[in-house]
Length: 132
Image (cartoon, rainbow, N blue to C red; front, top):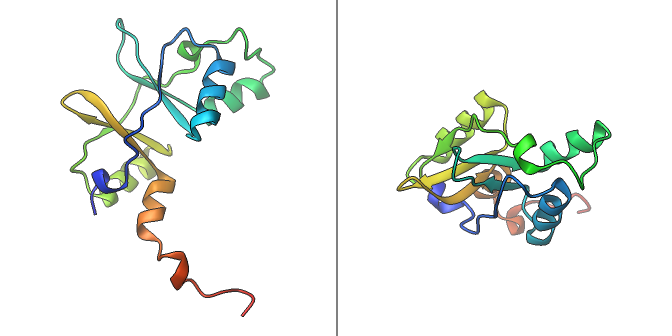
């Protein structure tokens, strides 16, 4: 199975000037764990729910902290033609849970560990009940 089969094509993109509260609100509304941060002057980056959580844990103000300050810019990108094994290996090796999927140098999707597990796990109808 390929990344294109598992990735979400609804990519949340934000700018580096978005506050962490704005980013968290958008991620929550769209029920996603990461946003692609686009800036004309820099490369693509990613802001994850973990980045927001770390900032809050440090006591930083989500209304003044910006996405650009907390964006990961050293990003590993996947392509739609990667296998899920390649994506999982990249995530495991890099210690992250989301990959931005690029096609023609543009974000085409995001694939997460959850997306991969959903593809690899048997359907719920085939899982034995614990109460049986």
